[in-house]
Picture: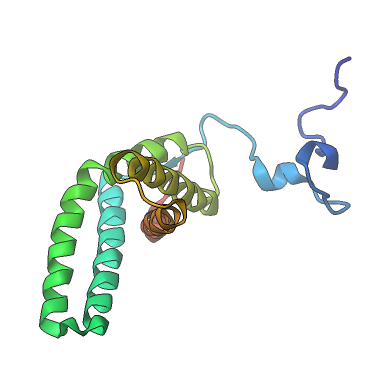
Amino acid sequence: MGSSAEPGDPVPASAVGFEVPHGVDVTEIFAEPVNPRNHVTFAFPAAVLALLTATALLSLALAVMWALGGGGIGASAAVFGTTLLYGTLLGSVTALPLGVLLALALRRVRRQSLHIAAYFIVFTTAAVLLLALVHPMPALEALRFSAGVGALAAAGRASISRLARLR
């Protein structure tokens, strides 16, 4: 038995797995017409800017936590600088290649919000897997830490959304 559905026909609710309001075509939400000439591009400096944004946010959060914990302003400034330096160095060999590969995989997805969501999901998953291999810890603690990594990656990707070029 073949399906009589044609490309562009509305997707039935049973195929989606949840009830779709009448008149809403989920293909408009989840899919865009595939045109090999349409893809999102970035220059490499945009990827570096995303890495620096995520690292600066991490450094700022750690410095504020250090200061609020009684470490003092001078010590928190040192924490900020150290985290920014080592976070950028570590991120350039771990997060930057993963971010560039993910950007290449998402070239044909035009919606920037889907890019940001993908960065959150992929970086969270990668952090969970890496933590499971390197530093086993309780699952909830690993997921919380990994979600923080994913949120930083998503924030870095969101910071360069205006730099996207649609070709």
